[in-house]
Amino acid sequence: MPTAKAFAALSRTTPLVAHEIPRRETGPKDVVIDIHYCGVCHSDIHQVRDEWGRSVYPMVPGHEIVGRVIEVGPEVKGFKVGDLAGVGCLVDSCRTCPSCARHLEQFCVAGCAWSYNSTEMDKATPTYGGYSSRIVVDEAFTLKVSPKLDLAAAAPLLCAGITTYSPLRHWKVGQGTKVGVVGLGGLGHMAVKLAAAMGAEVTMLSTSAAKEADARRLGATGFGLTSDKETFKRLAGHFDVLIDTISAPHDLNAYLGLLRLDGAMVLLGVPPEPAKVGALSLIGGRKVLTGSLIGGIRETQEMLDFCAEHGIVSDIELIPVQQVNEAYERMLKSDVRYRFVLDMKTL
Ligand code: NAP
Ligand code: ZN
Ligand code: ZN
Image 1: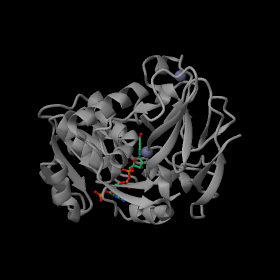
Image 2: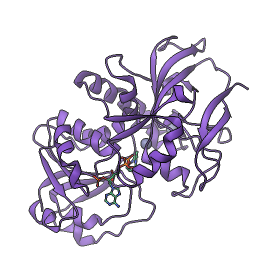
Image 3: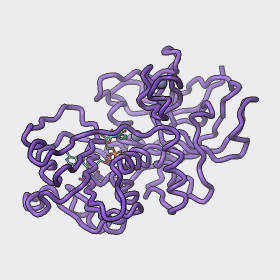
């Protein structure tokens, strides 16, 4: 079996190190991508450190993958050698269940194949992600990336972009919608850019006073410091939609108080511990507490096309692969502006 270079976690407590992994032979419908850049998502940290309790090692994280096609199988129709291509969190699904039929492969009833810390649909062959030199993916799960976008800065669109785009569309955010984005990290900064591009009035809710100027540059017209109780009084009942991207435990009840009648709070962050929600936080004002999981392949392509049209990419810090362990530590201190992207030629 062909192999590829990678950077892997060999256990939940050790730093990521250089590692060699198998990649499958090119199948008839497969696209082989030479990975140029891979974004670093907080989900990589949660899984490397086994915070969700289902990690398998060796683990090669990375689901914000962009690069160039270097080979295609004989039945591939949509890609040719030399094309730019992207891969996100999904690499396969059953393709026939009701969720797949609705282009919501992330909710595949049979359980989809995630890019890493997962298996192919045979439920046996492990998948390895984008902290790697090369990936082989079915063309049905390969995305087209516009050459108009800076390629390294486009990488985070494959997770941070679609994860925020999908709920903004689902909750019909548009001209004049009052959107609050909670947490200014990788997901948060994409939520601000995308909601602003959709015409919403965006307020950033952050623990970091130093990020206010950036939040405004990204498209927010309001800012609330969440360590200040006054913020929760000032903005009580203000928002139509809240997009919560916080990766650590926090009090949801306080944020629910910021929603107007029938407003919706969408959880995107996945803190390791469950949260407590008081019924009264929802009953008064008939509020909706909901979640959202990345987006299907069709919507991911729609998001990439929207970003190409609006010139939207991520604000990134491009780093050599060997600095990924340090990047994790900085993300845990909320010290990220606003996405680390690994330069795979350093592997
Ligand atoms: P990130 O870049 O590390 O950003 C998280 C932000 O949350 C931080 O920058 C910080 O913003 C805020 N924060 C961190 N700790 C906090 C605390 N203790 N209290 C309050 N705020 C805190 O992470 P990310 O990559 O955007 O991912 C965010 C979360 O979304 C993770 O849990 C990740 O696993 C999850 N995720 C979910 C999906 C999905 O499909 N639902 C997809 C991707 C990622 P401030 O400095 O502004 O406060
Ligand atoms: Zn992610
Ligand atoms: Zn399915």
